[in-house]
Image (tube, rainbow, N blue to C red; front, side):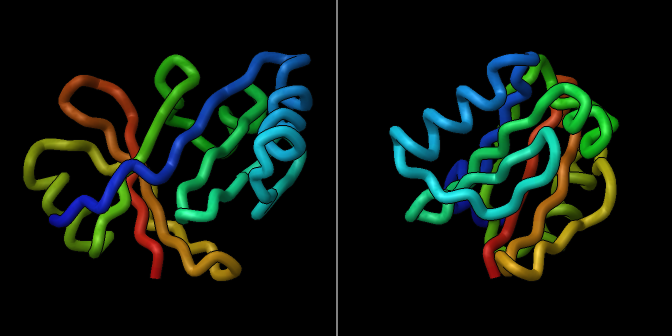
Length: 125
């Protein structure tokens, strides 16, 4: 497995801070919304990194295995299927299936590491 960097970040924001944080990231920092729905915004950076903002309800629905204490990150890999196999062989628990977002040409999945935390792996195609 070749890790290219930490390119996915997610935070779960308590009520009242979701909109303010989204505004900070888009209007002040200039990040671009990539995908959005109620309680969730995916914002992109020019280098391909992504930050997901979740309201608690959206996080519970979209990630039923949890997102640690509200902060999680993911590693960009060169081959998501191979990385998944290697993680599982090393004792990590794969969470859910591989997901593909066609509009972004982007695949991802979560896993639980030996430390008990949830992390992600992703691949830009």
